[in-house]
Length: 349
Image (cartoon, rainbow, N blue to C red; front, side):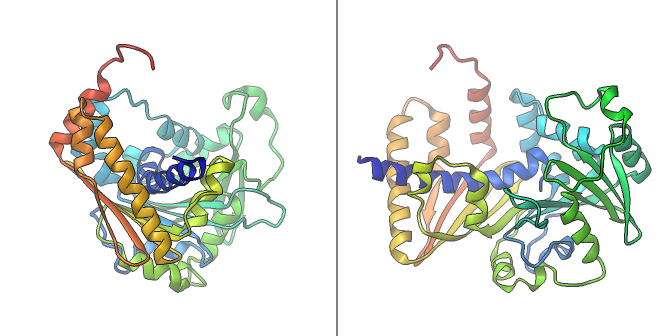
């Protein structure tokens, strides 16, 4: 296998893996009621601007109370660092406070900001606004009024401890940098969390305006996503801009324009990743790479029944410019994977 082919293979697998990871990130970090088929999209999408390049949804309550989550929690050394970090910054407990979330990614909103796009979480649940504001202010947050809504903004902790008294003794100067997180209660039971500019934009959209529903190109793809309690749709460049891939891999990325992920988490996990390529040639090349990887993986996992079962559940499909990869992890397969992951390594690799 040449270096060019190898880089293309790695890039293709990263694409598919990152797509699946989008849904899992919504669960594990909180950046993602009954399952909603996105035929019209959840109502919370109206708080995302029309220039959003990626939107995602997670039914947090269903995922948190699912059999899969209970198995992972009891069988694997998962410490919930993402959940704790989110609660430390905002005072919001993902497990008890949130029912569902939508997440949007947009280009940089503030002209003075450089670098990563702006992300916004809009969560519906049960929130004690007074308690959460007090929690954040005790940690040095500052409050501003914007169109009748209170926005609480706190700097993200770096090397120093967020509980250091010297940090909160003096009020921080107002800033809307990408190193801060803002929280605003848009209406009872609905909170927006993200960079200050994104939160203020969501308040602007409360009573109507140029929301993501006006983005026909994106919403057409949202409408085509199947029912699931976790899903994501976006432009491929929005995904790769967050992936921090090596330069050699980036240069070999297939010509993908859009991607989507949909998953159902209950007693098992079913998911489908779809990539929409620039042309049929790119799609055929991507299918060939994934097909080769699946064959190689099956050869190398012969002594591991849990991985063999996982690979057997993979189904590659699609036609024309579309490539699809789906899997169905039954409770039995998940039991095998959980037991294997929980076993201590007998030797270091």
